[in-house]
Amino acid sequence: MADYRKIQADATAVSLENVGSLNNSLTVTESTTLTVAQSGSDIYVGTDALVQTLPLMSAGLEYTFINSGADGAVLLLVEPSDGSIYGTIANAAADSVLASASNVGNTKATAIRGNWIKLSTDGTAWYAVGGVGIWAEV
Image (cartoon, rainbow, N blue to C red; front, side, top):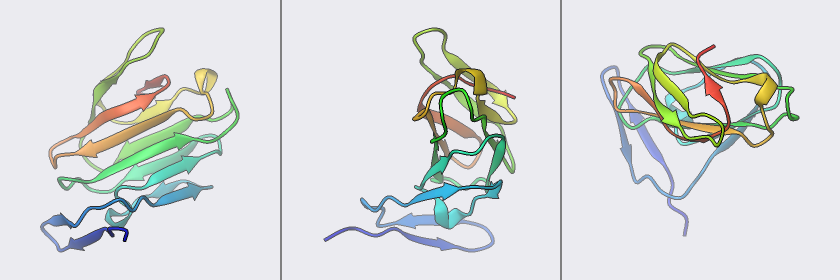
């Protein structure tokens, strides 16, 4: 029996209960502002220059963005509604280092189908907690 995600929200807090194996996926074809209910989702972006906006920070939220477009054809952009993005994504050529980034993008010229970044928040900042590909503040 699969575990299901239960999300409760009020004006001051978000609590995650019974976080299980259910993994939502979403394919976007336009710029989108994500919701708290979409936390834990894999978001597939295959259209160039769309902006995916994260919701206001609340501890425990996380999103994985996957470049599903052709190699060298899709700039995938993510920006927080509040706060900054921190972290390092190790790469063979040169690490992608995000230090107080106001937004992050999978650079179009180096984008490869399947590049991804996972962002998580503790309620004070967003963190790149995993990824593949060249990601930079854009």
